[in-house]
Length: 231
Image 1 (cartoon, one colour):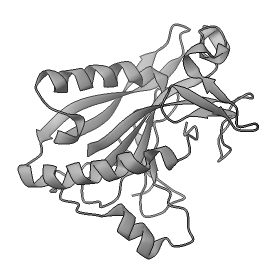
Image 2 (tube, rainbow, N blue to C red):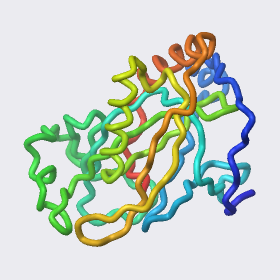
Image 3 (cartoon, rainbow, N blue to C red):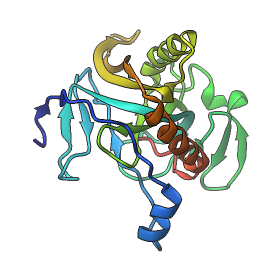
Image 4 (cartoon, rainbow, N blue to C red):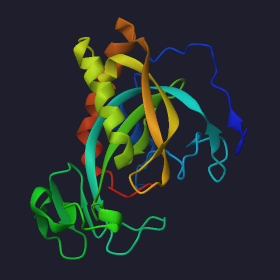
């Protein structure tokens, strides 16, 4: 139910999406711009994700959900004025975390050398340019990806999760991941919501064959999705 915390369905749903994104978009999106739905992490230490539901104007709130990570990559977003929501593109954005493009002039910048990527360039000693990670997810029972944008405060937890998987010979698109939230506090004493990751189960061979194909499709088109700041 929209705007209420809903429970995860305990029944396991097979991840067998054989969707061909190119064919789907060619048939159904001619003249339209594809835009994946997004899952949002709350501010202020909230413990429920906002996930797309039946009503696009009233997302569901869930404490946890399961999904396969199809693909993930770093993005950087710099706003000259504090971002307050909406669909305004960043003043400078990077789709790979390394090369940024200034929106107004088209100037190309090296993120590693940019002054806004230095600690102290933003509020409270932070970086003015937000370093995030975009994750393309396939949720249970769905055929198209959903985007989750991890803020800086969740990158450490995600890095540890990926390393745990790699140590067991697994990749992020080879398992079903359970996503949840915990309350954390930064050095300035401000509470924030931190994403937590755990392996729910490995994919079957049939599931992985379909997921691997979809992962390649998502990877090929990921750089064409705008690096908007979703927080």
